[in-house]
Image (tube, rainbow, N blue to C red; front, side):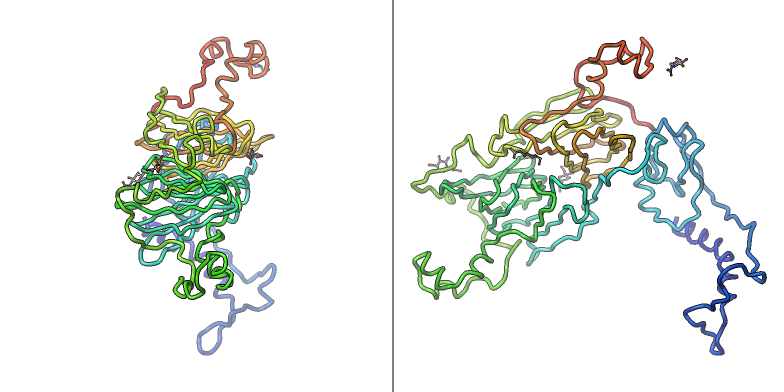
Length: 464
Ligand SMILES: *[C@@H]1O[C@H](CO)[C@@H](O)[C@H](O)[C@H]1NC(C)=O
Ligand SMILES: *[C@@H]1O[C@H](CO)[C@@H](O)[C@H](O)[C@H]1NC(C)=O
Ligand SMILES: *[C@@H]1O[C@H](CO)[C@@H](O)[C@H](O)[C@H]1NC(C)=O
Ligand SMILES: *[C@@H]1O[C@H](CO)[C@@H](O)[C@H](O)[C@H]1NC(C)=O
């Protein structure tokens, strides 16, 4: 395919040659960097080459021959020369272009005919975020925030890896932190403003939450850990947190000594820079050995910072399954409501919107696409893969269709005291038929097929 791209580029060369030959040449054969003023405007001497339309070889997928409004997913992954054509819309593309992007973003290259206008950008692949690498091969972290997704104002995210025994340094921040463990396991601990202590071990599928300002640490256990952090501030910056090392480095040593009742020399060997992500002494297997209990007591279970979400079985629905975690069962995270959704191949998270909150979504596994519709008439379809983030503003409708041949798994996170949505199907089915018929001109037989129950994930067949 690279060869093909090159040969197409060569095809175009003759078009540029007359321009190049119009520039004056110097005796040494090298041209000055600028041309002459006489090149501006009509030139009777220039012979514009025409009739050289490059012979672009391509074939169209069946979905590209349908009416564009049908908008079937186009799988360009193994298409050698995908073209921006849908039905009677579009035209071929001689280049320049990035074939890698075009193949995995078919809904951008050849959008459904129903896409219109310009919505916000609702996609950020973490693969485009610069990774911050920890010292001594201890791990890494990469983030999404309003710097890269300016309209994702209510939430930001970080994907972090800690190798076995590595720490995310003791720290706190202005934002509240909600986390979903993606792989492996780790020990988390914190002390709240009453001096009450918390410690727990969590594994893939579990959730934790640290309120704003509460100092905490994270240490990977034997198998290392990768986790997703979601913050309740879109402009959160992982590189701008309050670190234990920095508060010690930037307080006069005499003050530290007076405050903590030690000698000044006690602080001679503190690290001279932040640690962020670093290797530590492996945590003792027996968590009791690190269970600090004081007269203040431990943080009560009702206010626990962890939730063993991995042990909650999924609720099966027609096209997949759903697991919800919100303050009804995890009250400390009082404004974080989330659903982990699994969509089987061919299935789709149904068309819905959230009444009071934006939605921040992370794709954990598989691939899917979504159309963001915003008032009054803008719509964009995005193609997502694992490691991508999606963002759907409050009240803007969207669906997520599995476009691959394996399960699609993602987590929807809201800033809301309860996980709720309005489902388009349920709404239309539960509205008096005459009102719907008068408005949408749907037939009686179509109306009788609508379901009043919320579907969450509908089943379907794959397009190929
Ligand atoms: C990590 O978790 C992801 C998401 O569940 C999964 O696809 C991947 O295979 C896991 N990696 C390993 C090494 O287990
Ligand atoms: C820590 O100790 C307290 C008090 O004995 C106990 O209630 C709690 O379960 C312990 N926590 C862990 C993680 O072992
Ligand atoms: C929850 O989040 C929303 C959106 O950011 C915000 O408007 C609301 O004030 C928050 N509610 C609470 C109780 O913090
Ligand atoms: C409704 O649909 C019928 C065909 O089923 C068509 O004849 C009619 O013009 C449509 N009405 C409106 C208002 O679009």
